[in-house]
Image 1: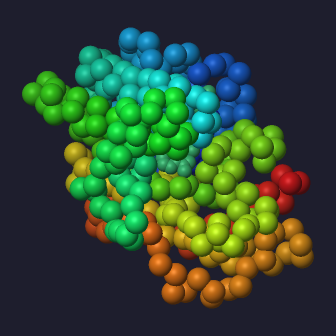
Image 2: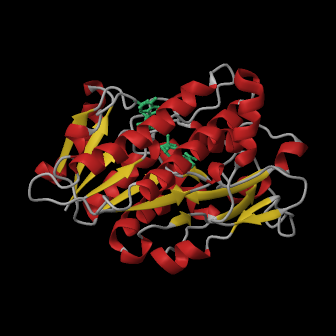
Length: 337
Ligand code: NDP
């Protein structure tokens, strides 16, 4: 079976492509320009013609994915802007997030039956950004929760809303658009939709990245946690996380598990505080921030996710922070950072 992966050069997507290839799928990776081909061709060379690439220059254009979706059994849609630039306009996030998602679903609806291959499933990489709310009381969020808060802030403040709120609003609007599209077209659609909602994604990188500054937003955050001295206040802050390799496996399992069809699934390893992350890092002279192992045991986590559905439906198991920190720092060492 062949799977289209959009945004195939991204931090998460390259791991998704690799996991799909390792699981025996063929992959068509969609990227924005031909310049992105080189690194992907190199790292997946051993898979021969099971790996191919296609250029989709502007995912917001009508019919942008028409060619890319032809002849695939499944789609994994990851392409979406994830940065926290406060000067960006809300549209810079929302338009590609929402139009890109609707565009792929429209192409899937139109061309999902072309030729002898029939599209069976579309997986979109949504986010816990579309789930959580910032609030004073600690809370465990589930798939029933929606982040209307960021949407409201962006409606009210426009460009003055924070970068993270613009990003969160874009993920919420894109995921709602996907859910509504499938509901609206349910009589014509012969495939089903899975929405995966990960929190912060950490872990080693296999995409093209030249320096720590060039890391994607979440991997960069992890780098900063371990290398930049933290203020006491920051040490007590945190969120939830998942290792990129576990998230990639979730993208494969989302295709393999029949019962995942139609589901929204939180894919989270659990909560962390900055200080737990530091505690988990290998003790290597003065390179990384030093923690006090065991110090965060009784910490109160503002945000938790109920990830039991990922275990029940996908059969997920999760790496520990120790494993992620060990392998991520080893990746930095190998890159000479
Ligand atoms: P990356 O920045 O590494 O990858 C993003 C991918 O999306 C790249 O291929 C990028 O292409 C593409 N993309 C970005 N903006 C656009 C645009 N305007 N038009 C077309 N393509 C675009 O990010 P991640 O791998 O971290 O994120 C991948 C997905 O996972 C996103 O949907 C993100 O929202 C989601 N996610 C990420 C989390 C995380 O912590 N990393 C957490 C939860 C969800 P190009 O390289 O050409 O810019």
